[in-house]
Length: 301
Image (cartoon, rainbow, N blue to C red; front, side):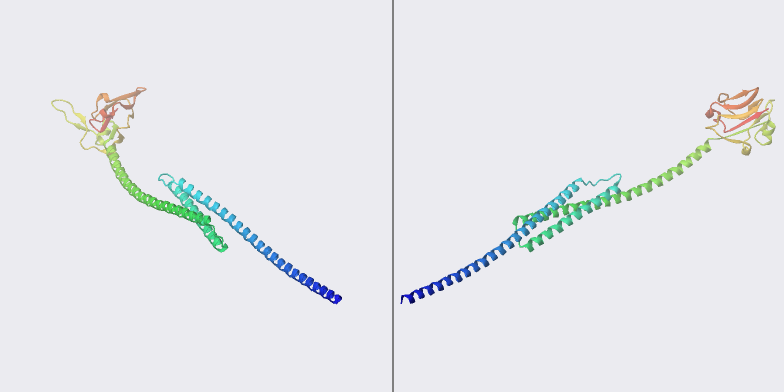
């Protein structure tokens, strides 16, 4: 009887031991699965954190680039000066080039902000400070765009004023040219009249030659006085040499004797002798010399 009881107890112990072993195996297996799941979750969390950190770093770099662009645009706008004067064409080319560059930089900044916004939405990461920064940058870009549009409007207005001034200048130049032509024409008339007024005529020769050419006539005497030589009213101009009263100071003669038939003050001229010959006539005072007559007739021997 005791032997049977002992056998039963041993059997029960073996069953209990096997149950414990099986239960322990089940518990260990479950724990292993949990650990594997935790490891997988940890790996996924690490990847999420790395992606988040990478996105945050990219956003920070992009913010820095955008702010650099905006600072450049702001400083560049402050340097631009719309003025009028020499070199306007070159200045306008530089302004247009600078405005184009600023527009491109602002467009580039807007595109970067748009891409960042899409990445934030697709990542599921919602950081309020980033949203606020994006809104702030968008506002700054709008302000800079408004400033550039104002600058372009000023440039257009200045071009209009310059074009208007060019038209006025062209009209003024045309008026000046017309007046200059009129003045030139009047000047030519004045010069021609002055030349005409200052024309003088000189003739020399023996009395016989002068009479033959109608330059001198012989008038009858009065009360027993002899006949005298005088200048006729209608002279033969072709026999005379034309002179300019303003520039003529000497007239070559080369004769032994000379006497004026025309009237000229004695103090206004003199005969210059060389080797017992009258070499030339020296007009000392042209205004006095030609005052009585523009025709100088010299009889020589």
